[in-house]
Image (cartoon, rainbow, N blue to C red; front, side):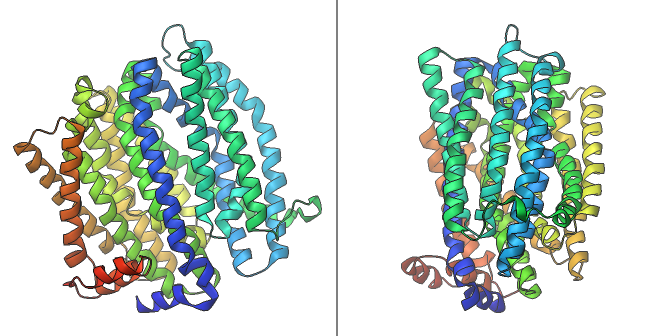
Length: 532
């Protein structure tokens, strides 16, 4: 771990790693806070203005968009990898070929997808269960959400430059502008013209346009070495990007069959109202994934940089520590959500929805494993080893889809069967295959990353039990009570974690990025865990 600290502090990495990492973390935290505040406030707002059934259509629209977006998202992942490596090596000619090949290729793909999106939007009301009298509104909602996605995808040509230059703080500025602008527009439209699904689609479009304009300006300032030129389009680069991107597509399909199949199955099997109820519990999964994105998103440029500079030992050390820290960090919100599930639902959307507490627990408890492994995926991208993981993800994603239908139709579990299927299959994949394959790529001990996942599992059990004990003795049916209980558990957990949960080297790595006064106070606390 000491070698890792020196790698992060070395002069050649000073701007991109040591100094930039805390800025990236602050940017990700800001984005997360905005995301969680808006997410939590919008759900009861939509339920009160549109109703549960109509609200369920909104996350369904974003789920469908995920499948429409497969090719574009996969291409952006491939471009991120190659562009980061080119820029870290200082090869600006190659970087321009990568950028322009992506720019013109992605623009062509987006143009071809326009009629596809129009057709999908028209036929959506015929496929899914839609609240009575809202078929045309749903069509325009899907059309607006998909159009906004295409705009953001084209905008990805520029946000990928911010990623490649390790300016995730600026990338999150774009993300925050998108969220805030579309939320403000939704509230304005609903206030002036009344609640309607059409206005949500329109707000998404305008928000995407505003954010894309900002992204273009920021990219030009951060990465002036890149410029749009048809002469830099490189057919050989197309093969590189599509070679990796093709298998990322396969992996993306499998991933979507894990994380965005729930609402589709519930809507088709149980109707719009059930999908709306399921979406309420699922919102906490979305928020927890946002938290994990705050942490894992900071790591990816670092891993790619270590790969480009052939610093394999540092790459292994930081990924191993990241898996452990991710599990320990995610254990806190996951344990609180599971321990206070019924009380959260009562305070958040009303006591009439507290019956969804068991569903919320099933959807969230397994995330302590399935989010802890996120840092490992950066290794597959860095080493361009995405074919086999893609095949496995696709096969297990199909298995998840089949199991969700079986458990829902052939048992009396209802939509709980969908949640159980996802928990089982995704946990099996990320407990065994994901950490094993990363060790195979790096040619290291097979248990290197698996051992790092264990502390998070123990922590979520501790926090969940602690929360259950507190709610047994104290009524927590108000926001003040929940906040107070959560604060007590958080302080107690962080104190124990800092003293006995982290090694000296892990503490040193974290305190490097804290303000001086806080760092001095943290260093004064004794550490009882040996270095590992």
